[in-house]
Amino acid sequence: MKVALLGLLQSGKSTILASLSGKAIPPVGSTKIEEAIVPVPDERLDWLTEYYKPKKTT
Image (tube, rainbow, N blue to C red; front, side, top):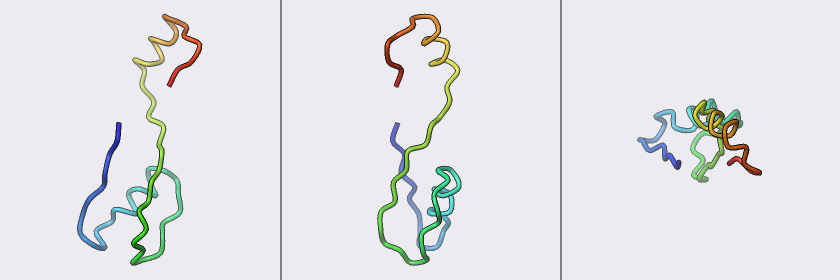
């Protein structure tokens, strides 16, 4: 799943990204595009992994 955070300047997009990903908050006014990968636990995937026992779970 891919998610984009869009909004006006100084609206808290970087703060939300930092709190979700654990990354440092970039300096104010930074125009660099920030990316992060955040693990999202899913009990359904855990159950399927236990049931089918695949070599790899992604």
